[in-house]
Image (cartoon, rainbow, N blue to C red; front, side, top):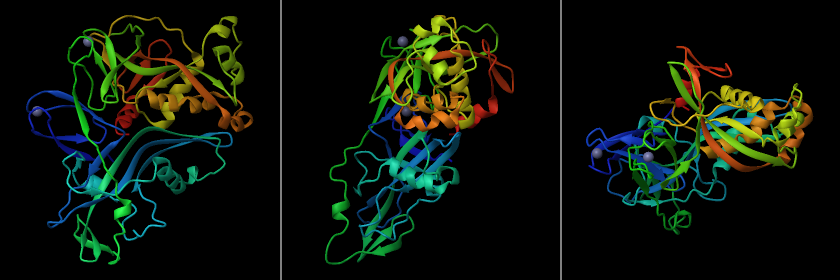
Length: 414
Ligand SMILES: [Zn+2]
Ligand SMILES: [Zn+2]
């Protein structure tokens, strides 16, 4: 379940509310659109109700996404949604501090940590992998230790801070004002755990095309914004907009929606050697005769650039990748109905191995070689493919692949 963050419009100061995955917001008061960046990850605080005390914030790592696991001869997938204390409890005297935040992030409106958030912060020393290992242990399918490959896709990783304060010789929860544990009187056990000099801030960027100055278009959860004036697309990256190469496949119907896919050109070495489309067809043992022209066609992987149910995501990636359809191309994004890009290119790159794995016909035989598979990406672009809007489903105009609208709606909430 997503949570709500309160903030102020950087232009006019009016209060605005954002959902967890919202990056683009238009202020309802002054009408200015801004795009939100955080350096490494978003940091949020739960509001405290403490009496006049110095607040000490304890970090919780929050992960939402899909885990894909290649086991003996199949791929398991499930949605992971976990929030856990970002400190190892063994070896440090912090028992009494809750391991999880329960429903608090959903029940309370949070705020971003900025340079004027008062208080001190305990350092998060666990990585999201540590947290996910514990997440893996919670679910039967992921508990398997004998997997050949694991990927976490579409993640929203953030840090949520729980406010605490010292009271007498103890530590209190600053939301409930209840004591959590006592602290030794003779030395300060919290001091060595503090984050020395946190310099976290948020960047708000006006959504103007860096190329021509027009307003960029996108939706609240878009990770790529487009300019219909100069036909460019821009990915948010390190506090600025970086241009993304786009291709548009022409659609012939009246009710056409253009769905974005990342086309990633990549070769593999190690466990399975694949350079060309012909290699791919041979290695994965597809029941099609390899044509001579395929020997010189660099292998590209087609990954949905939008969040969707994990099973559908993997299925679409496999269908598009195996068929390597040679589409026509057209110019221009103007007046096209574009479906928002909600999955960044980096996540698509992380999906290459599972896409290859899912394409393999003899999984039992080849899966043991997956751990050595090593991809080198040599190019990528964002391809908009036309889908006819047939009410309950969207049908790809050249290939006939259909996607249920419900799975797209579900994907927006991932
Ligand atoms: Zn405003
Ligand atoms: Zn432009």
